[in-house]
Image 1 (spheres, one colour):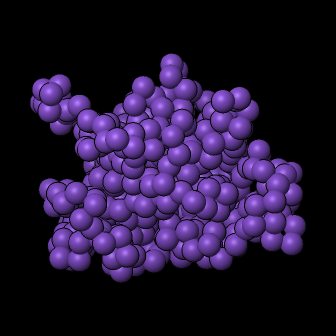
Image 2 (cartoon, helix red, strand yellow):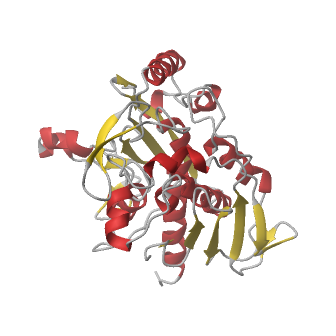
Length: 354
């Protein structure tokens, strides 16, 4: 199985399965001398972990980080950073009923056809539990990039949408509610809606917005390695992601050039930021902001028609512990992948003479 690594210089390789002994990773290319606060890494893991509220999966995992190399006396050594998080609360029997059947909109069938074998217990590598390793690497990247601020929040759940510009929001409210929406009134509506969806045995999708602030000018390469192209790749690699747009996105197609152009101030900043902080594939120093769309979780607690390995139509029963809406737990994952991507470009710039 190829494709288990991300990044060119700041490079993360992940391993492990949802119902295996552990999930882990090796982070190569992190510079030496970076002071690492383990508590900050654990804090981001706690934001992602299951069982943290009544609107997420009730699988109980401590998701405690264990570092094996690359950090000594609280500082990176420059060596590969190896880490592991042990799985402690698997219920593999919950998946026995799909051993020979394919869940709709899951990776089950394509895994079986591609590899000739699959780990049906929670989906193996296709499980979102793999994203634990991304959160660890992203938390390290944030500490390496201490002057840059990464903030993600839930912008919408189903049709309930926060339409205020991010500049008008109080980001300190994001962690004050289980939905991770900075608007407290909308957060309460979203939480109530997710609970309703769960009672129906169904799931719902949503959108996460990410804002990157204090970004330097000059990150990104102008042809195939455009900054927004790499950010898009990083976000689309996250489980359940169906869409990515930055700056004005699709709404910009309805504007004329005279409306869409970001006019300059004397200091090189722009009066508007419809470009989303990126021009010509290179960061321009303005805030980078983008939206990431997540589909409804594919496992629902309802009977559905599907096929088995023999191609026969069968009825599959929804079982197990699953999120009715993935977006609240995906907020730290979006931040992590953004931080990993930016860290890679920062290190790439160190290899280039200006």
